[in-house]
Image 1 (cartoon, helix red, strand yellow):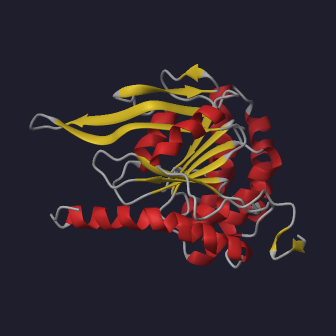
Image 2: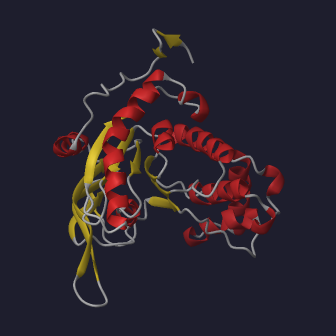
Length: 303
């Protein structure tokens, strides 16, 4: 990829790090995204949980978030801020206490049939081979076993596991199991990918390999992605936008930062770019305070 003037060639203009998108600007961003029906639109969503002893725990305050078709949005924030909770609302696994989730302009009621969900812990069946674990994802659609196995072989080849189709999960490394899980999700060709710290348990080198694999597969058809992570560098390296959530409880979205870095990207190389560091500095200026508040609350201090 060529270089001009110290920046990335053919890249979108990098946002001014001194002017990050803050709390008051989030709604206008969503309204702009809604000019065309977004893949995901969370409108005034809040989540409260009933407590066994009575009362309620307010996990997420009223929040708005839109993800356009083909857009890769990463969500970061302190532990316990409700990142995965918002993801579960988009998946239809959790009904919001207020507000609603719209999927391609249609209000979500029940499970999100247009989404594939990749969890932090893979959901591979230990008694099935890698091939069968991928093929089984097509069973609910009535695909014949022969056709499902053929497509599963194709997807395992795409994720670099052609030589491991007959291996059981316990015979695979952590990174290989993640590749099987990714193939298991993508074989259904979902229009939306919901990813909850999918590479969290992996070592740094394997995370980079998986990140590049994800970007390569994503670039072929540009599905809408909501990607939850604790790793700010990972979020910037992967995403078109990084959304920052405040410390919980009663967490909300406090920052929405465009990532004006060119594509295609290499996870390792992009982190050396000056624009990457400028974006990281701008986001960390917001995220750091929320992380500190979360630690203070965990120690019983008022933040």
